[in-house]
Length: 126
Image 1 (cartoon, rainbow, N blue to C red):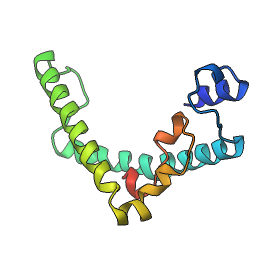
Image 2: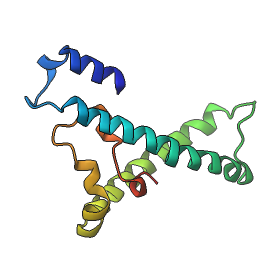
Image 3: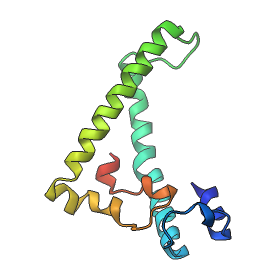
């Protein structure tokens, strides 16, 4: 998303914008700062802690790679699972209490830009 902020600030993308309103550079910088904080303080620790758990569960990251006959059905299954979980999870986040206390942060920007898709409360990221 960072290259698009650069292009937007330079005006290269203005003819493609649907909304006339834009976010101030300070608002974009707030989003970037918070995302960096979340990536390093929430996502990174989760990834580092998850790796030993996945290894314990039998997942491997070494060669040989599984055959395409094993990979393709798993990819199809996880695309469907991800779509299902995302849809119902997002609907749940729009219930009154969760929206008010967690999900409203994701809707803070009235004029979205690429990085706002990740902009969320730490509980929602988890």
